[in-house]
Image (cartoon, rainbow, N blue to C red; front, side):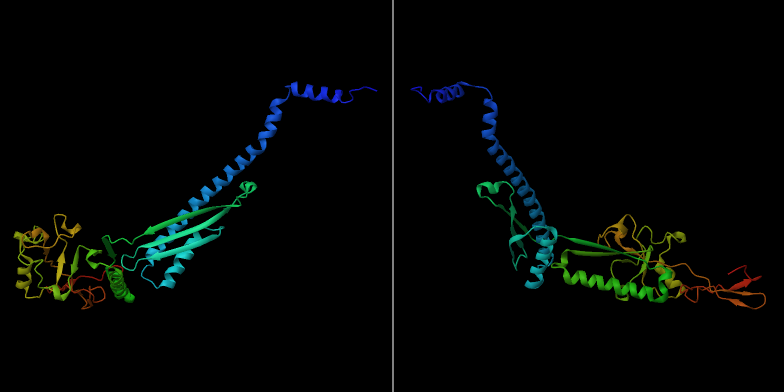
Length: 312
């Protein structure tokens, strides 16, 4: 029996220590685990970063909703903020939510937090990554310019459409006025479907009306640039408040009317005389007054018509 029974094992170990074959594989096997963990953790942090962006977007939307409802009761305000936040951050749990509004400045602040569950970082006991977003909004106090474009043509006279239009326009103006924190920054204009309008009776003596025919378009429809108010006086009929659009681009701006600049004044308007009707040779009278709706009748212009008209 050999006196050195462990010599073969020592030789094997010695050769193993001197053998450099497959070193790369051994090293790769050793570092593979931390590489996989690091790559997985990078995925977790990337997911958390994307969720952070989604949360920030949802909080931004929620704070804007809070600004809109900043004048409501606290319960309504909180409900609108919560609903908006959850609607824009679906499929994720909100860990905490806080909001505040300043009663003086109406500034709204919303802060929300959430947690993103990890898939790989849990190996070193990081089960979730916290995310947070905060946003603040103050309702603007900028100027508001509203233009009402209303149809006031003849077809609106029937079935109460014109009265309904007037009521709706008045209600809208009242709502805008009541909801505006600073009415000096609220401007509302009216664009009718015509170049002439009839003023309210309380404006018949307004200094912004061109009673003296100074505007460049005041008498352009008549010979010798006749002053329209003189025509009313000559015919012995009252002027009931009809004015036409201002010239020189003033019909497109809100420049105040001033006697120092006649082009800013509102020219008095005289509507053309409308036909009264005619008699046929058989004595039949035909009224050409659009169902008795013509109102501009200054001259007696009934005349004879030799025969009945063709068609309606």
